[in-house]
Image 1 (tube, rainbow, N blue to C red):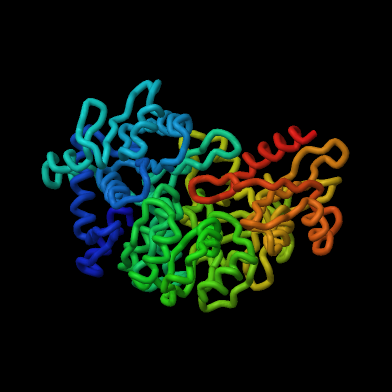
Image 2: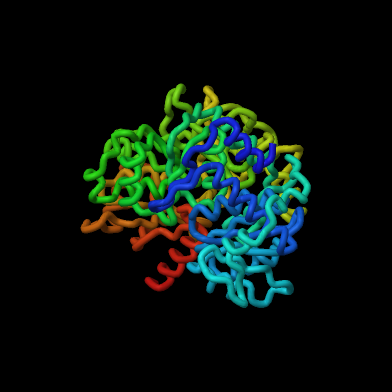
Length: 510
């Protein structure tokens, strides 16, 4: 099944119903299809053909979902781009993907215009909320001028055709374009739905639709006949109000969002009694934060694990199985996992090594990057670069990113072990632990801490606390207090940036 058929099957199975809520407006599933057909026709009129790439770069809004469906109906490939990226990053993605068009909004059109300067072939710019002018088309005008059903002249996409090219955050170099096929995305949405026994309901679209996690949530809504309340940005006040208004039972987010809800001082003023659980992914969830959320909202947080190359869900907790704090659950149907050592030999249960993933959800490779594709895809297994272990009952525990491992004096130190201890400190709001080069020990452990508002906390107090709970070699040798942790558009902590910041601060102090 391709992504176009997801919406067709949704309408056949559930009839017409309100599918999208945005501000004070609502759009039905049949309206979504109509708009998508018109967008497909408009793209065809511009000369977009099967296999061409079309970027979508703007904050969450209904037009993002309309555009995604329109692009695949035109036989083209979606290139979702976080609108928060720097113009240089957007420029690279446009150049590397060879995008023929970019759908955007007035909020980021100036940034997009700057990003497209210097390209050998300038893509069409299509704005969702500006009148047509010499530099851009208007999406809605383009839709009105297209001939009815003109998009149907194109070939129907096959399940193994690329549906999406999703560029990674590029924290370790140039972003890589992860190719995801229709089969990758459809199978992952279907198996996630089966795994969680997702009920038909109204959920919250708080994740960026430009991120594969947010894209999958919308795909699951097609399968379940659910509705989705779309937010242009994450605002705790708006989220809490929507939970009560729509009687939301569950939604998916990331740890940064869960932290913001727990920290919101007026949370008690909102009715969140309908909320049963929140799914968390994209970054490690501190156990202390999970417990604080449960205490405050009387709702569970079920942590899962995924990555763009796996479209994205690999494991998740199930409500009918025991919950294990610190674990990211068990594999969803159709997904296999194993742990290997440095020699590629599979390790027994309980031992730490690199996590490998196999299934219909795994990418066929990176766009125009055969070398990197061969490095991470071997014998149908995806090498994730994450260090993990599997317990006797099949639960997966992510220990850390392989590249974030700290080797101090020849001993391995997993930053997450130290972070879990510090996150439990009553004066700590957030923490990230990194390793910095050290002449005598190879690397030293540095804790970067965001303090809770209005508290006093010293470096010596933090080190003394750690010494009570950690082995001596794992205790941070330096503690840096910072205003905020650097994050990407979906809330993942950018440890590459943090290492540079921490290094610069320590040099200034010397």
